[in-house]
Length: 279
Image (cartoon, rainbow, N blue to C red; front, top):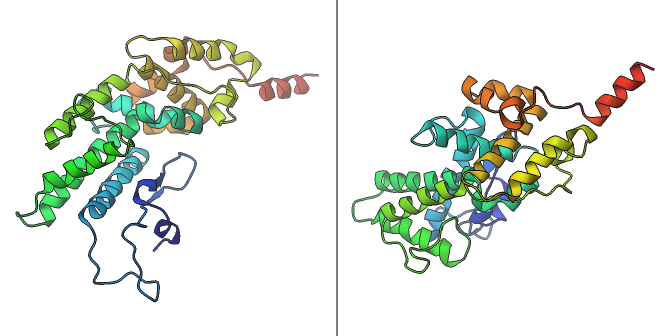
């Protein structure tokens, strides 16, 4: 058992999905890990329903993130364009932690993972518990509880009515997913993250200007387009990344398609090396 997971709550569960890092995820079990005198988990200890459901949902949520890294996001949603949008969102966080943190509640990557998790948890409960367990109500209670704590991706019905069914919840998630495409993204140009640091190069002014303009636009799909810009920069930073994508998506994320450039400019260090070589 991972010592770290015993010390964090289930809502601090995490996944390691960065392209350049080893894959994996950890689920916080502080709520359900109630050790005996030897500091070992008891074999006969009841776990509260809500703690159990929280843990199951977290497992499926983080596993969705891991699948995105290992296999890509094709077939995640019910149409190709939404699959592409989730893939953009996943790639947009690569080497770009500040972008991910600042836009967390609008990231399709996170909205999709949580919607997948509650539905997968529901199916798990149905398959593993007797008919007298109201599995749907357990999921509904989980969602309402998260919203009451002001820490969830969707709000109550009409901002005040609690959910009563999984169908209601799925509709709210679908609406949130679609609306996120047109929500402005915040870009911290002072960040030292790899992606935004590239934009400090002198020759990248045109790229930076396009990103600045998009961050200020209030137009349909402005969030979608910004994620696309960040995903294209992620491919520039990690060229081997593109090999994991369908050819159609590779083309869409080329500098020509995204920024109208035949290729990305040289970085300052590349120019300096070139000048030194030709002196």
